[in-house]
Image 1 (cartoon, rainbow, N blue to C red):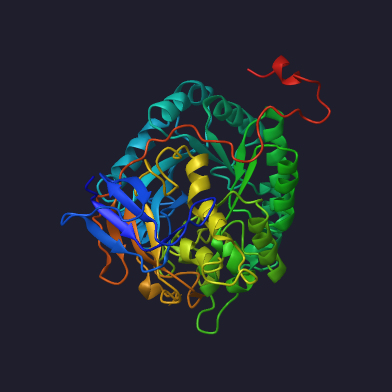
Image 2: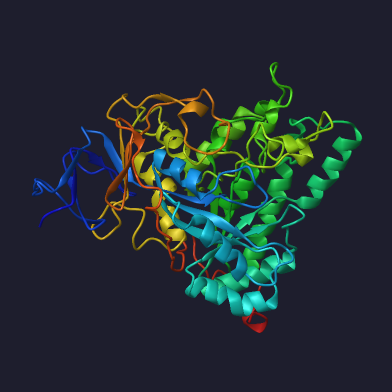
Length: 505
C-alpha cells in the first residue's frame, strides 16, 4: 500500500496506554490506515518525523461559543477555528441558540450553517441551546434535528433571564432527549440566589468587576447541581453538568456516580489555574478585572483549584473543555459594556473568557509528558480521555474521532520532544479574534508542534504556524451519544420498582 502520510518516531498515546516508541502511523485518504513498523513509503508519501515526541489524538473541544448574537465582538468561525488548530484542537462543537421568541429551531440552524461553511479551519458540529421548548419542538422538530441534521446534544440554562428554564421545562427536555439518545448539558446555578445578591451589591454601591465573583457564590452552583442531578434521576436521563467550579457541586456528582447514575461533569482550564483575585482592579486599569468575568465565576481560594485537579485525577470529570466565550475587552460592545457613565457595573459585563487555543497545552503541561510521575497532576491516557476520546463518545463521534487507531480520521497532534516546546502564553502569539488572553504570562511546558486534520498538516509551529486552509473544516453530523459514567435504568430511592411506568410517556 502507498500511504499519503506516514508519521514516524513518536510515542503514540491512546485513552488506555502509551504505545512503544517507534510505531508509525500510516494515513490514506484522510483516515488512519494502520499502525506498524517500517511502513512502506514512496516519493509521493509525506513523512513527518516526531523526533521522539508524544503523539496524541486531535483535541475535541465540545464547549465553544462562536458567532453568537449576544457576543458581537467575539470570535466567528474563521478566527475561532484558526485558533483551535494552532492549539492542537481539530474538532469543535459550537452552539446554535434558540431565542426565547422563536417557535422553530430551523431558521437559526440555517443561519449558523451559513456562518461556518467555507471559513472553518477545523471540523465542527453544533449543540442546540433550547430556551423555548414548546410541545411542537420537542415532539416534531427535535427528532429531525437529531436524526437528519446530526445534532445530538442540547444545552439548558438554570440561570440568565433570557435563557433560564424552570424545573418542569428541564424535565420535559430531559425526557425528550433520553428518548432520542441525545446528550443533555446543563448550566447549573441558582438564578434567584444570584439575583438577590446582585440587588444587594448594587444597593450598597459594590459594582466593580470583582463583585461578579461575590454575586455568584459556590452555594448557588452547589444547590443547582444537586437539583439538576435530582431532576435527571427522576426521569432516568443522562446529563452533563458543564463548566463546574465548586468542590461541593463536584462532590454531588461524585456521589451520584458511585450510585451508578449517568451523571457526567465538565470543567475548564480557567477553573484549574485562575482565582477571583484576577477580577480585582489593576494599577494601570481599574476595570481590567472585567477580562476575567465568567460564569460560574473564578473561585477565591487555592484549595478550590486543588479540589478540581483531584476531581480530574479521580475520574469525576468526564471532559475538560474551554467554554470559549469571548468578547473583546477594549470595545464599547465588548467587556466595556459594563463601564456605564464612568462607573463599573459588573452585572452588565458580558460573560466568558477566550480559551480555545490554550486548552490543550494547559492540561498537557501538567501531565507525565512534562513532569515526573510524582509531580504530574494527570496521566497521559487520562489527558487523551479528557481532551478528545470522552467527548467523541459523549457527542456521537466515536466512530471517527477521538482515537489513534485504524479506521479513524487522521486527526493527530505531535508535541515537541523534551523541553523544546516550553512557551509563555501571550496575547501576541495567539490566533483568536479577541484582544486579550486570561492566561497572559503563564508558562506551559509544551505546545503542539504539528496539528494534522484528516491527514493534512494544518499547523506547523516551526514553519509558518497555521498552514491549513480556512475552508478545510467539515460539518459533522453526529450520532447518538454514549453514556460513559453509570447507566440508565437505576431505581430512584424510595420509589417502587418500575414506578416510572405509571407516568412516563
